[in-house]
Image (cartoon, rainbow, N blue to C red):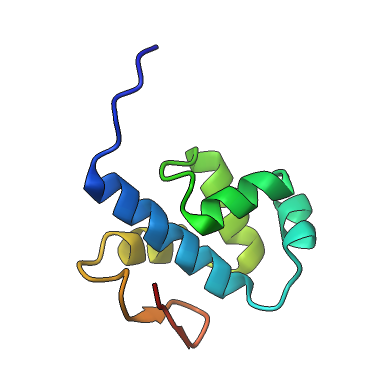
Length: 98
């Protein structure tokens, strides 16, 4: 299978996703969160840092469930214009920052 190069928009959405998941995780240990979601800590680290811009849907769904985010909130936040620079992370009461 040939993988198409990521667009700048894909990269930005991946960075917003990482910020959102990191903020929602809060003080909870990365290892605990990853294990509860059934992913490796390295996978979670890469997603949170934006190094994996397009993680698989089941991975996102599992992590979102563990950190208490609905998929509707995740979708709305990562597709909101300007979401990478400011805004509230749904369900966290915290501000997003890049």
